[in-house]
Length: 151
Image (cartoon, helix red, strand yellow):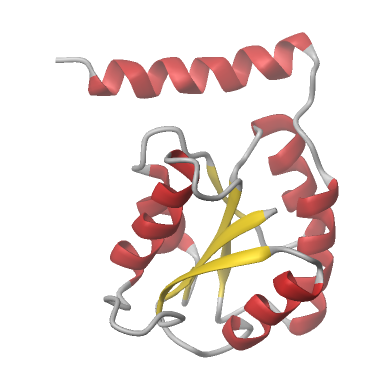
């Protein structure tokens, strides 16, 4: 799977993240502090990773900043992206199942190395629910997004 990855600084689990994704067999597209010559700030780096997903260059993305909130907010501004800030494996599994999230947001400050592995396990093992109510919620989020773009 192609996974776009962005970090605004090389701290915490940032260095381990790319290696772990590649160890799992994913091809990574790198942005921000992970790429030479790109703006490292969280808003710019997260937008680039989210656009990779929205434009079909990647199936999933992982966006990171100090708290994870800014990365999540920026990614969610890209049409078609459903980014979820996950601090544990249960939240990651739920985000994939009930929200059909396609962008994982992580905190570089608070995600431990052990949690990183657990979160990635849950994220990549998860898939979107096919339950009618769950699909209706995800579709409604898309309707909200389309209404926001309408003139």
